[in-house]
Length: 116
Image 1 (cartoon, helix red, strand yellow):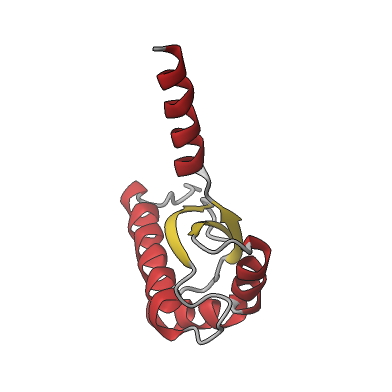
Image 2 (image 1 turned 45 degrees about the vertical axis):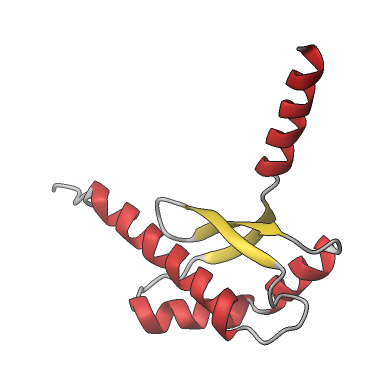
């Protein structure tokens, strides 16, 4: 018996759709004051079996823990919207991670400027 493999582009398509939905929900539908205007989705990492999804967010507020708590609180709502719009059988479990690449990049730039 042959094992049916997924087409490679399907994962990319589903991943980009999930990222789009999460971005829109955070920007327009979440009413939690801890989250409104304080974060932006910078990317996601979806597992190959669609069961886990790391959502990387850039937080502009000084109280990053509060914003993450607000996002974790809205987790079920976001997953519900994903199901409604994509109709997936398996909805990924979302985990929100602070994306600090811009901070690290600016730190590297500072160090390089000191060397010159």
